[in-house]
Image (cartoon, one colour):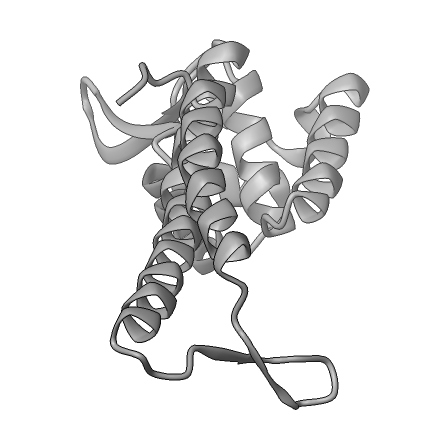
Length: 175
């Protein structure tokens, strides 16, 4: 297998990899992680980490960290090539599948924990109110103000709606 180098990438491939890296930073993803993904997405064959490192002119340790991150997102996987003991990596090639998986992962990592904390807060306010305790929150001047029952109910109802909507975006069937 010929080893690609930065100079062997076409100008269009270089442009795409640089752009994907820039977009990654806007999405909250490390630039190198996004560039490694872009290279694997474009590559017609699985690549070992050392070739990725050489092609992108990035430290091997940075490539290893990026590959672990991409595997955690489930959009890059390890494959083995006959006659080569090294791990090779390939990306999912279907853009819509990548979008679906990233949406599921973002929901699992970001939306679900936030919705769970909001639900806990609503339960705590309701429990405190039921027990006759003060269920207050701080206003912008750090003064304690009474919790608003209808507001808490709205949040609880909104949690269910937000969960259904995020499930829909992530491509999951309603729970």
